[in-house]
Amino acid sequence: MFDWSILVANQNLLWAGLLTTLKYTIVTSIVGLAIGLVVALAQLSRLRVLRYAGRIFVEFFRNIPLLVWLLWSYYALPIFAGIDISKQAAGTTALSLYVASYYAEILRAGILSIDRGQSDAARALGMSGAQAMRRIILPQALRRMIPPLSGQTIIQMKNTTLLSVITIPDLLYQASYISSFTYRPMEVYTAIGCIFLLILIPLNYVARRLEAKEMH
Image (cartoon, rainbow, N blue to C red; front, side, top):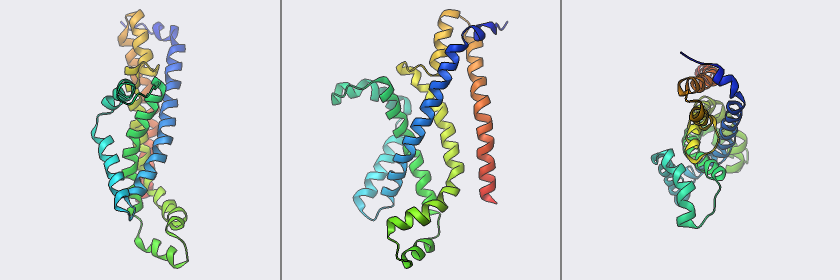
């Protein structure tokens, strides 16, 4: 029989874990979006070296499992690169670069979806390529990219559960810790699942509404 008092007695740990999860989701999504934009623009560059560099970045991070990259960032960098990195920095770096590779493809596709005539019109008005991108192309593309970017950010929140493997006290780590001394994993992990559902179902609904709005 479920003993929900376990959750009440340890609610401070659960709240702390939730705040950590939300913090890493927000920070890594913002950093990843900035990196992803740079990578997307690199792939659209006229310079072949930049296009290749952008493509290599995307293929590298999209094809290595996040768990492997997370563990490598924390345990292997100090060994092979002599970089003394904290678990917080390793977690932020791994999650940011990983999601950046997905954001980059979303951004690249969004930019390419804008009619080339928009760019030609901007050039005719005397704008440089960078000005046309900043003032004309990106503002229009962002409207189309909001739904897929929202969906990827939702996935990013679920990805943060892997932070527990390097002992960052996120929601899943706190659940494991509570289970270790209460011996009531069923209640704890059920609560974790419910917390994610309460947060992600509304976000998924909003993402679908945005997508439907954009399609119409």
